[in-house]
Length: 117
Length: 115
Image 1 (tube, each protein chain N blue to C red):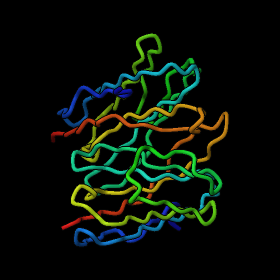
Image 2 (image 1 turned 120 degrees about the vertical axis):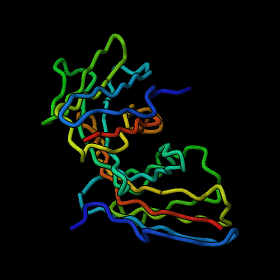
Image 3 (image 1 turned 90 degrees about the horizontal axis):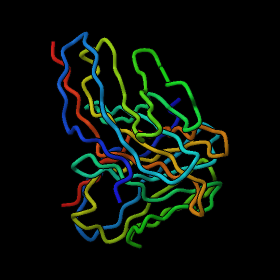
Image 4 (image 1 turned 90 degrees about the vertical axis):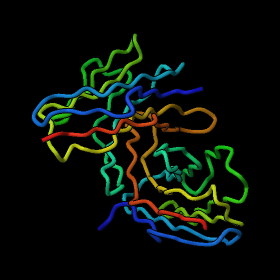
């Protein structure tokens, strides 16, 4: 069963504007973590932001913020003041466990963001 | 110093061959992973090791055999390569304990092309 859903395969945003990348998740665990990673065209995976399931405040890291709505099981990434260098693939991920298999981080299918000059 | 390094970065080989990818982390983490990223960019966990012990094995064909000689190293050996094995293989590490965020630190990836 799909546990992380990113419904936007591709998004366009004008430079200097804000953009929201959607992510919904499914879990029966009470304790879990939510992450966003960026993958530029060069291929490396870059950690952006983390939200714990018990955190009451939305996480922020510079221009990145995570809009966490626990009841809706959504964890959208908001990028403010988009820059050309933000053009990349963005992955939402969830860490569950520990179960019998230990901790596991699973990823959504990703959203490709294009920032227009 | 690169935190998580994997070699080689590129492999091109023929079907039926055997190949290995090596990974090392200098972050002192206790858990290491192999992920496979296919041509559609989908990232799928393959294995995880915690302190040299296999924890996760995600229904990967037994042609894939991970080995962790110590907690800083995790290698992946692939036998009898098939066309469908072509992908980018990422090594990652994290500190996994209750209370830790479990953020993954990724290597640069190893692009495997099977001809």
